[in-house]
Amino acid sequence: MSDNLNTKYIFITGGVTSSLGKGIISASLAKLLQARGFNVTIQKMDPYLNIDPGTLNPYEHGECFVTDDGAETDLDLGHYERFLNIPTSKANNVTTGLIYQSVITKERKGDYLGKTVQIIPHITDEIKFRIRKLARTNNLDFVITEIGGTVGDIESLPFIEAIRQLRWELGYKNSLVIHLTLVPYLAAAKELKTKPTQHSVKLLLENGIQPDILVLRTEKSLSNDIRRKVAQFCNVDISSVIESIDAKSIYEVPLLMFKEKLDEITLTKLDIPQGEPPTLSKWKNFLSKLYNQTHEINIVAVGKYVELQDAYKSISEAFIHAGVANDCKINIKWIQSEKINDNIVNQIFENTDGILVAPGFGHRGIEGKITTVKYARENNIPFLGICLGLQCAVIEFARNVLNLPDANSTEMHPTTPNPVIDIMEHQKHITELGGTMRLGAYTCVLNENSNAFEAYQQTNISERHRHRYEFNNEYLPLFEEHGFFAVGRNPEADLVEIMEIKEHRWFVGVQFHPEYKSRVIQPHPLFVNFIKAALNYKIQKTVSN
Ligand code: GLN
Image (cartoon, rainbow, N blue to C red; front, side):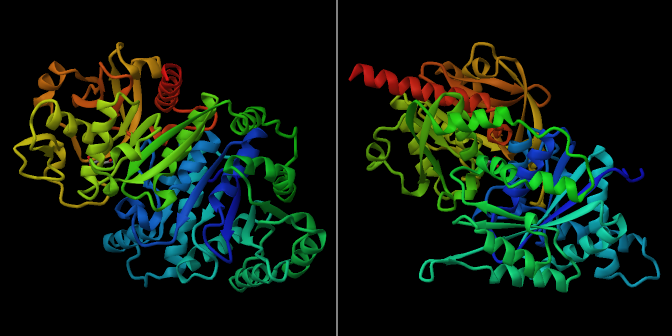
């Protein structure tokens, strides 16, 4: 397949520090271009040696996002999907590990026979190939490629060099480099400082790249003098110095970037007619609702990686979307599952309107999650269990309702006499841990008489998965006899996907991850109805008091 000659390539690099929000800037620019009618996607290049983040502890790298086609990816892809409302795929996340793996595989096959295989040209060629391939397969107007890490890191050098080469190959009117940096405010001097930005641009220049646009993260508004200084010392025109001031919500950033004309300057530099400016009416509507909510509820979310706010990114964002849909501000209290036990449950869940048990792996904190489920079940508090959250609900029900005190998942207790959660058949002989779970989108058929159906309003749904263990169907008759029902199943493999307690106010456990599919203008139905149930519960409590 040949290149789409109309595709424009935008590269986003970062300087000074990490965590400046390159993902949000990339997603915001993409949103503005999309709103102008362009076909756009975003790709993330991660300069680490893991093939994908699936084998990383969330403490290391935040949440692992999962695409429909089963890729375990960087959490920025979640932002891309939430902003653009279009799915990403395997091709949208590339790591150094993946690049090296394919080059080394080709070397073993003899594809480079007779040649010395080197970072330049072989690694850089592979990087360029991955960028251009994305443009070709999707017939895109723009590919925005975000380079992870910070300019100056040894590990990102091949990516920077690949951009340098690609710009030369594509022509400078077909590509653009946007560099995101920090302008720190020194409280003692009462001054914003531009020197780190100047140094970071100098580093890029040393590697042969002159950025076209500079986006400056700042906590205070940039004066004209500051803009002029940055422009002069970094060789860009003053209109290409864009302020990115701290925002109350990440969803404000597209509007802030529009105000700063990031999209307009991008189009001008790439010689593309402006057309009509975007109205972004749905987006603005979402924001005004976000800032003016009538109701308020308290949700407790229980997980094992709660110290890191990025570890459950998609769940936190799904709550924001569902809150707007219910005109309801959600106060989420994240609790470390290891801290929960019978002695303090009452205290932890005082004034709680809904309880979520998060996904997870391994034994740590599992008993705290099971205690949490018990509290939600016995006290009739709206409950949503996701993946391991559903599995904990199953274990809890088996132990406390079915009288199987030793019930467990074989993940936690491989020889448990009552394996109510067991490893899936096709997982039993897998020895390699990377990329081998049940991953990506699978269909699920819903019973019409269920909370899930009430939420989705359709019987056939598709949701994304990431697990090795599953409800053990041998126990299903016993569970259903006691009121815990399988209301969603995967028809091909007859796997239980959703379970609900009928007698409960709203008790839903799902084997998949609904949070991956919640978007700003399409909040996820299960989250929406969970929040609705929590709000109704709060109202009922107030009335009966
Ligand atoms: N550890 C469980 C499994 O592999 C749950 C996984 C998850 O919560 N994503 O089945």
